[in-house]
Amino acid sequence: MMKKTFFILLSSLFVSCTALFAQNIQLHYDFGRSFYSDDLSARPRLTSTVEKFHPDKWGSTFFFVDMDYTSKGVVSAYWEIARELQFWKGPFSAHVEYNGGLAKEFSFNNAYLVGPTYTYNNTSFSKGFTFTAMYKYIQKHDTPNNFQLTGTWYLNFCNDLYTCSGFADLWREKTGFGSMIFLTEPQFWVNLNKVKGVNDKFNLSVGSEVKVSTNFVGDGWYVVPTLALKWTL
Picture 1 (cartoon, rainbow, N blue to C red):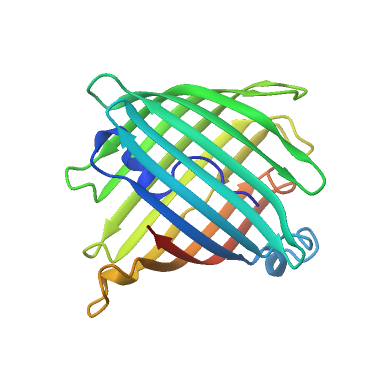
Picture 2: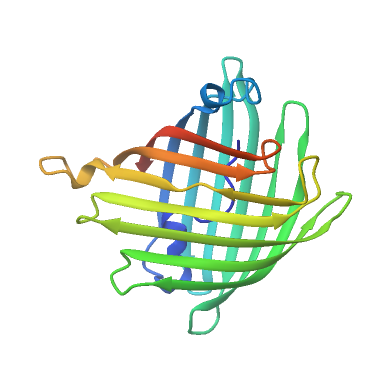
């Protein structure tokens, strides 16, 4: 299962902090087959993710690329790129986004999204959230005109030893499972470079992601945890 939309961890900083940027590489071991052996028997066990967030004086850019692996190699790839535009001061920015990808037996329809974003960060940037309301156009879809609501969050605590982050998406898209789709992927990380005695340049984190969805990978609700490693560049 693919990750969905912009967010994750430092993307929530957006344009409010133009001195920061971040890039990370993640590897997730997915327990979908173990939890749903009948419905998700062909689900890949390994997913890699490359993310980058980069602010500038006109806003910020965020993208991620997911690739799913089996013993035969890469079987699917998916990416999203989003731009926040802000030529003014304040918590609101203009959001534009593209989603797309391909798998062994099909391609993901091109999706184009646009709408306003509200961003909050506390003064120390230890916690924050965003909310974006978007018009979503899905190219060559039976019902191309849709909408999407997206929320993201991050929280660093215990002197940045632990990080909670994630996103939640609700969007309309006519599928074989239903017209309303919900997806959220909260993450929890232990940042090893914050452990006493560990070099502060050892930017490895260990943690987990829980993929919760309805009408996305199948009919009804699915809850799929992962075990994960993350290296922040």
